Length: 318
Ligand code: NDP
Image (cartoon, rainbow, N blue to C red; front, side, top):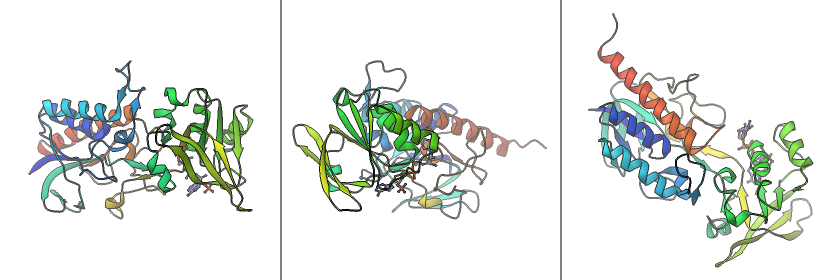
């Protein structure tokens, strides 16, 4: 029987593992298998340079940061296995977690399965991934590649607005490509974007193809007017997809409380879900901040919440 099984090995999972290990909980981390959908380390693994994680003034690559976090947790006894949870039984304690070929019983669970940025699904997005294609301006926007050069942001929600405004700090021009003639974003954010001298909004447009070359990476995008079907090319060195994130919560449908967009709901200022003994940390429950450092912080909170909960089960106050 495990004390705690942690699902996911991104910043929140690794930090939860570190704290749980140091609390002598001997945590087991299911870090997922090496596949495109479920990468150990989550979204960080698809990021190149991380320049905003405190403690790394020279920057650090996403995979390197994940590896360091994992090493630190392992040093204190956390166990990582390359398995993915495929089914989970939370209706009775102990909880049971199943991978394809193994099962674990556990007193508690910390869910850090993260969220996956959505892309349009173009083959050319895949081809230039990390060579101009990104889904995180906050992570990648300040890279030298984008400095004083035009970039494109796709989307009309608050994320697209935030990412566009952030990119105006670096890029020479930000083209916001939106498929309608009105933003979904809050009015204040939309107005700010429209008024910005460095922003051009490409209304009623979608990206048909990301253009580029093997050596340079992204060199432009081909836009299509959704009404006329007309296409035109825009030169740019960056293509930022900001069409939303999908939290990785399918496994918990109907079992754990989720909000209308699928994020796990935690109690205010804690990582408790609606099932006692089940905690959620990182991007799986956070649609607002979504940063490696905030995910790590909530992983720490989850391990502390979990440790206290386990202690209360074992020595209940009568
Ligand atoms: P949203 O779902 O709000 O917006 C997604 C945008 O992408 C929409 O404009 C949508 O177009 C567009 N889109 C979706 N699919 C496609 C597609 N296939 N092709 C082209 N365009 C597409 O996601 P966000 O990530 O922006 O926001 C998620 C939530 O987080 C929201 O509630 C938002 O308010 C919140 N948020 C809050 C922030 C803040 O308060 N500071 C910052 C960031 C997010 P269409 O409009 O036509 O559907």
